[in-house]
Image 1 (cartoon, rainbow over the protein chains, first blue to last red):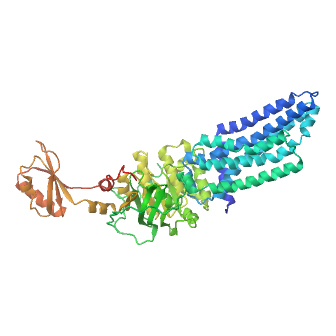
Image 2: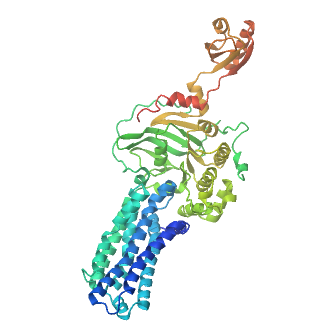
Image 3: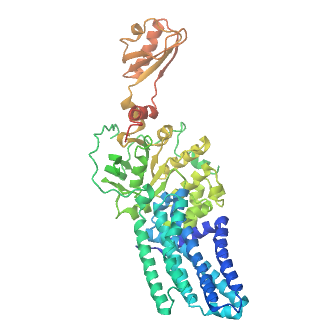
Length: 262
Length: 342
């Protein structure tokens, strides 16, 4: 797939401009992370310095897992709209008759969701860590600071966001109803969250090696997902909802063409 | 409307398309050969062949589900044919030529297809960028002016009336100066003033040498604007200049109206020069009566008919040449197939 940076950039700018001008989307995209910030922060701040280490560990596990959900839910919903939304606005047909390639279109659409989703994910995590370091009891703050999930989260935020985006885009190319696309995208984005959950709740201990291995694996899955979505992005299927037919048709009915001008 | 100057371009004083007189010796802009498209078990387009000359305004008519949009989508490289072949701007339609064709065409679907939350200028600039156009700002400005929507350039597309959205969509298709422009129902849902404006724009395109492939249900629109029309109903039913289609399908005739029914019309009309036959045009009564005369040469028949009527003592109210419209042609060819399984 040959891509032009100028065209992909145009797609990114257009997507961001549309997002920016839809206040409801901006408000909900910010509100959701804030909700996911309030719960974990309150959990950490209410732990007393004298709390048992097991209680402390459980709460820290929970608190460090919840912000990861932001990296999944926000991009899943946004990317699910990206193709089905074009269809809904009637812009898909004129868009697909331009020389823009699949690679440019998909890269642009994915980047336009990835950048705000990753920034939001890191921002929420940063705010959470900052608040806990400033306001939590000293042993609690130290527990958060030294939790093995913290570096793991930094690795997994962009990788989970990328997975959610490709899942959302894949569904968006095959579904004609926005609500169905968004619900399926949320469901489709959850499988890798399971791995993050296992690490966050220390069912598997997130050592450096394990995080690197799982991170590498998720990166490979993200790359493969990108290729799968590119294959799913078929102009004919997008326009007609059916697979391109290559078969030999039935014999045509005899024609009675009247052509006086010929 | 700032596009009024463009509105009248290409239309003569009667508002009909000019330049129908002589076929143009230019290479075909669109060439379709035995094109067939099957969706599952349903044949949408069956063995269709035609060509469109460069600079021609070509009308593509047919009932709903006749395969018009499918044909346009094949030519616009959105879907692939099941069988047959086509070229657009000299490039074969297929995976290899798709990107090149997309650089040379513009498609305006029935829905304007504008991003509601972007301004008109932003919409155009986005598509200009995707089309890789040089000097984008100038192109956008010129296209907006040509479409008569320059004064609304900074308005959000979602805030425009339907007529203005159609104009903005036309501006979007104009800006990449396409060799072939596909317009699908460009006046659908527009009021007469907005329709007139769009007609002017299409006529202006002809003057600029753009090949226009116009899909429409409005037969008077096709008759007014198109050099040639094709009537589809899954397969091609007919193709030609509107006047040729009328002449081929309908014999010349005269409409005769007299103050009172003739006691013996046969005695008056039979044997007159160039008159082949006659029939009553309406129920007999005490008021004016009408007759339709099939003639070989209206110019020869009309004076003879007038003389015969006067000699028979009839008060002649009018003798006019019957004019069949493209709608008559369309109904003659398509009415029987409308609603039949396709």
